[in-house]
Length: 458
Image 1 (spheres, rainbow, N blue to C red):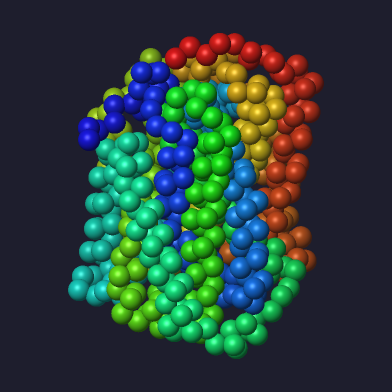
Image 2 (image 1 turned 90 degrees about the vertical axis):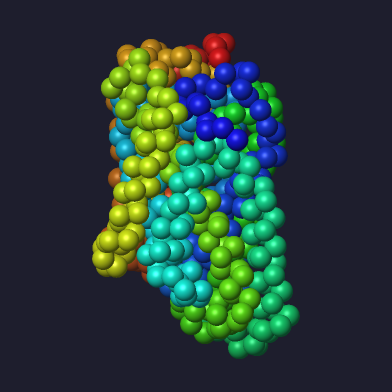
């Protein structure tokens, strides 16, 4: 399979291919990984919820957050450009760079964190090689897929979804049918409103964090291939691929009676963990490849704003992939443990900037311009009808960040409302509720509705 030749420019009609249902596999397979299991384990270990309450909170969070994630799927098929390029329609060609730069940092942090988690998990359970050596292995596998690009990532997601899904079923069958779930597990933990909201938010933010990725993997679909089908395929794949690994994390730590997921695998699954953990590590490699690929597309988007006539070629994307993976590798291998923990917390803070962005982006696409954009203007030096800066949108975006601050609960910062809620983080709810209507009203007063009822040229 050849290396992908397209980067951020609109995909020509002759190169459009695939079906909306193909999106299920990429989101299902990529979510079944160790990081998802670890996130689920937060419900009983950090939020001190019982088994039923943990499972319910995580499920509700993913079900709600997945809606916002999957709504972006139609944008790629209709416009044929990466997700963050389309952001120029709301923020202006230069104004969008503020959001895109933060997203690149988020991609870098996720890649480094995944490398560390995957390397340490494989070393702890399999031995043989050092954690650093396993990190290099995961990096190499991730980089190869990212370099080859869109079609390769899609291609390996299909067998991965079967293998990872089978491993997930095997885990549940072994824990429930062989190891057994003691009755005491059902009585452990408890319920608190703050804890429930905290776990629910963890599930919702997991889904919302995928929002900048979604169109990157649907932009090759033929226009008119079915926005509804793209939504449901992405939604089902991401939600199902996230909920069950998270529930597995809850069950493992509660049955094993330990807070560390890797140790819980060993206690509950015994020798079976030597099969399951490597499979879940493939999911880490898949997720890292997606982060590297999308991070490079976002980086190219920023660079293109300062050189409007420049057309990035495959070599530029390959070099960018190597650079981004290399920086993440250095962070993962050489950074001190406390630095990585702090850096991961910083990346989690960056998630809060995605909430007002996704609200603005979705309201603009579905309610304001209703999918009709001048795609050629995305690549003009002056931004065409979208301009270089949209100060009103940037102001709305700033309001969305500010209103979340009192509700934020993070190891680096906890707002005063979050303290009253027992540490529960509901900032994302506040951000969505405030920013979406605010942007809609602002566009209504500016007379933007219907402004982009133009035919798209591909």
